[in-house]
Image 1 (cartoon, helix red, strand yellow):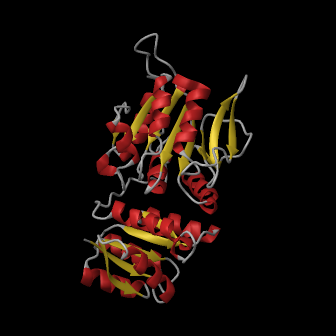
Image 2 (tube, helix red, strand yellow):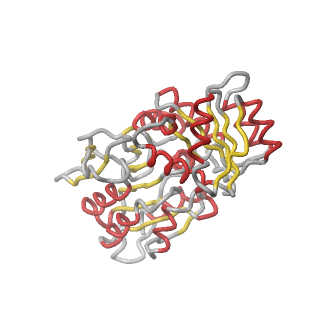
Image 3 (cartoon, helix red, strand yellow):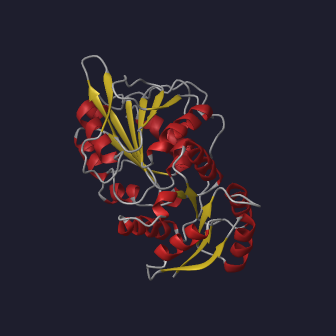
Length: 349
């Protein structure tokens, strides 16, 4: 039985989240709290497996409560976030402080889509419950300051890879920040990232990363040229793909395929990378639920590309990387703190 504590100043939100969670026989809401102070008291007394935490609350807000929880009694915390620019900035800060994921406030409202809403909420709680809280070495300044020196090719078949495609979901923002903040300014490839994230979040996410990384980080725009030393964040709610032109690689942002489960989709991105650059592509699959990215990695590998996956021990949810590893498609299972170096090493293999 997974024990959940719901912390929110809105009586409606406390009731809505509790009702949906308790529709699953494997989850029990052991308590509710109206603010951060009550949340800390309830956490100490009830020892929940998972906490849902609102951000804006009286007396003690969610970010302050989260800091105390992570210092005193770390456990998985899901932030309840509004889908606004301000909400996105607060949620990204919370994930940097140790929250594992977030619940959009819209997920907690009664609607015609209530079954899917319940499924998403329950899946997140189940996926993070009892996972060890792993804190990546998020660097305010990159540590890889020495120039990138290409490895001597082991054979004539060795190739320089200039495209890195990253697929990531639950627990992704701090994982992506840990990797990108460790890369040097002269990083010799371009990076494109499909992070499962709402539309309002991807712009602030890119801006936040750009402020702590030596490489450039921006939200991808349709029609722009893909360049080395830049990381492109796929806009939420749309697909981002690459297309090889005569003398450049072009970024495309669009709505097709419309029936894709995720937007942006790691599979859609990786299929385009396989088609555009083939063996010049390196796929990286990080923490996340489900198996998005596995089919795309298989396609990329069939064209001579390579793939890295994050280790179970350092994932918030070992779903997406596990699917790739168990399919025999991973060229390396790597701890998060070692992933930046592994990416650089694989550019010249």
